[in-house]
Image 1: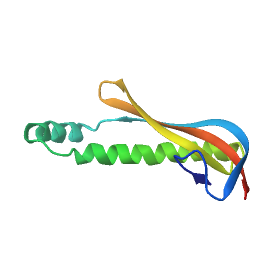
Image 2: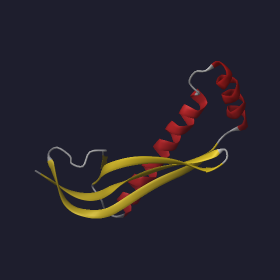
Image 3: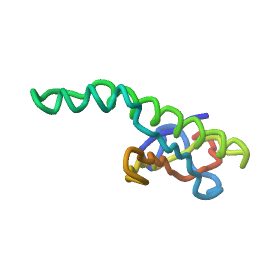
Length: 106
């Protein structure tokens, strides 16, 4: 399965648009990460625990998006975008969305 943030793929022509596909993950903060983040907030710097958490969430969201596209029989997902939002205090959602398509090689 090909997937990209661009709207086209070099060497391919979009034959059929199958529709919008999504993949999302809601992550909550770990108490240990919150404590370390609080301490880091005093001295400044990257919150590596949160960076890792969001990276894992992004990978899971893409995996779920690709699974949904596969169920539609897609060859690729184009125009992938990401969105984040706070759901509750201490948790956030990462949403990946794009367009599932059938391709024809040019």
